[in-house]
Image (cartoon, rainbow, N blue to C red; front, side, top):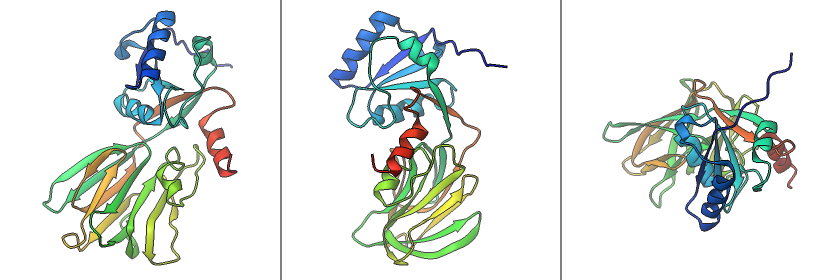
Length: 260
């Protein structure tokens, strides 16, 4: 039995601060109207990938589908912009479900900090000295010492961002995996990271935290002088991203693996 087509009559438009995005928002509101995001059936985000991440964070627990159109710099997470046939595009769009990472960081003063990340959680050195990190998976030590600029844990959605720049693997969007990727590793020289089940809990302990301070970052939220960080995917939170047919997120990730 076929599922009924989704109803996206009430649209909320959000935009970045760039003139291009603001002008696009005003033009779309004149054609399709605009409602408060709390009462909307769908949120349409106009900008680049930065605006999309902000929008996903803003509506993370609302369960509303989000459809991005590119009016910014980097548009990997966005659809092509057009003022025409928006409601038809929304109805035909494919839904990608993603889950965020939850970072629980403890600093050297014993304070705990929690933040969500859609792309990745990263730890990196705060001084001229390399970081010394101990890595545990589900409470079991897997790497007693990593000497590097840092390490990151990436979701499939974030695997083509910072993770890819750090030579990490590209992960299909529906793969139940996380990427654990070192940042400029010095020792062990041949370790290039690991693929983990997306139910794994990653713990990174900072060795010599006073001498070799490290910061932890969940997307754009930074905690300085951390002692240890727990990272895991929160499967209780589901975010819905809409993509035009033939331009879905899994198709874009597949294209990245072949370099185009």
